[in-house]
Image 1 (tube, helix red, strand yellow):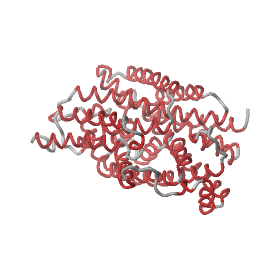
Image 2 (cartoon, rainbow, N blue to C red; image 1 turned 180 degrees about the horizontal axis):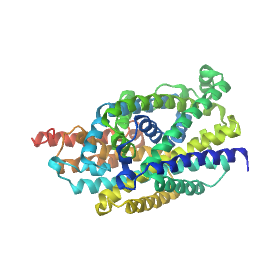
Image 3 (cartoon, rainbow, N blue to C red; image 1 turned 60 degrees about the vertical axis):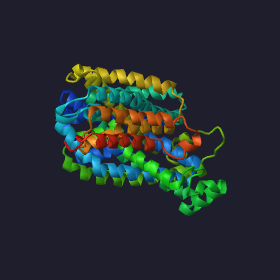
Image 4 (tube, rainbow, N blue to C red; image 1 turned 90 degrees about the vertical axis):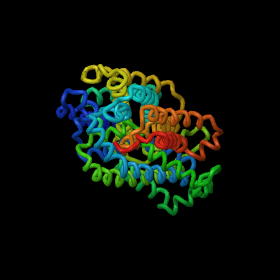
Length: 471
């Protein structure tokens, strides 16, 4: 067995042990399994949230897009981070307060909680179905990202990566639920940032630093160093604003918002926010820099898959033991993101669709196994790229669930009818957007019109319903 394989398996085993160790701190209850008894520290919350938000999408998707389009890919993350910051600043603390008061273990359950303790089963059921379908697709994208890493590392067929990944996901989930996911995420976030920084330094040295990299990119194709993306139908400002909405769409992502549910107090959100964005900024810059270096250092042809760029560059630049560490971090991070998504889908089944299961620890685990099987099938037969799968699922979840979660967190509680219409308006708008010409879809990210539709329905509800006021 090669040193790469040995180091990969050793580091992957270490990450697994971190997750399994969390079992010693668990209580055998559905609340601990799904929200870790709302006891997670700000440091663990921040490192876990940023790793969950930035695993397969950043390692495989963003680097692949940067490889393909060049410097202009940075606008995606500039907008995305701005919207994400706005959500952390205005929503997360209030969401923690209200979800804790309601004892909500799932986002659909939170969304269905209305005035005076009433619960809308229609909102709960519709939002749970959306979570199961689209978060399941999102989780499958993580399996595909891990599979691509193993394909480059060992030459394995993609289905082997998906198979190993689903086994790891089930191991995480069965050992400690969301607590296991959070612990392993925190460990992986350190490896992710360290390996990306090391790879960036080595890549810059090979290309002659930022200046040399710029010159090499210009020589390959001047479009790679253009600051503005090509063929924007509505201009750069509208394009960036649409990605700001993408960041705000974090409020519709149950696997990330569950971290805000699990943090130990609302007051701890401020500390978590500082840690989260310090890490996020550094890692994003590293990913874009590495993506640009990949375009210079890797031979490309029409058959080359840009989403294989990072594993390939790692294999060419790093010593074997560090190749194993980097790709173990990548693979494990994508899997622990996927297990958070599987757990959120499991919560949607056991807490929302089948509430009679909600207090049963064993039935909650059974729900996890059902979801894991569905995700595995999607990963095996889905053909889209990791980037496409992630941005499509993110758009649907952010558009259909995000606006209602925001107004609920701000305690501007709509009626059951208005709340349901908000979800359906966001859903329908995104589906309609996907039918438009590619030139329009590529100029404005679908989450912007989707979230605006949801907020529009809420504003109409406020205008015609004087009861839509702070609870």
